[in-house]
Length: 238
Image (cartoon, rainbow, N blue to C red; front, side):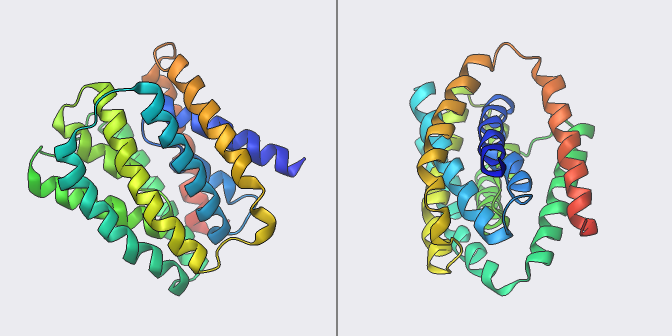
């Protein structure tokens, strides 16, 4: 029953992440922590994320902005490495508190200023890419920050989704081997990976179908409020 609920929440997170546009990892990571420890959650959520991004690139079928791949993606990948390496040297309680603070700040800022975006220039792309990559390596989610910077470039929706997915894919491919080298995932969880693949592809497909049928502003605000509550819980140590 516990495993079934874990997978149901993974599927829902992938659908929601596709619809609201800031990634399944931000939604699923705090939920996964209800079932497994922080390091295990990092790996399993990374796999769901990587599979989901493959699905988004496949289903949306739009061209990728190659310029942003270079100026945003390369710093993301580069700083993912030190972020992931630091996980083994920081207590999980501190990482959960950092994660909680990140969710709380992101939710509060997004609710107060939903149209927030940074100036569209090369320095901000490099800074945004580096910071989002570092956060992805350290706490398992940097998609919200990545989105805040990428939206400044006024990309057509399909191009934005494909470009963001391609950058996130490169980040995940970089951090997952570091997590495995650190012994983050016990062998008993290996069987979860193919299930997460199926759920991620299915969730991306369903998300693509419903993205234009749900009042996105209302749905996004509900998710943001939930993330804020979860953030407060993580910061308080339950």
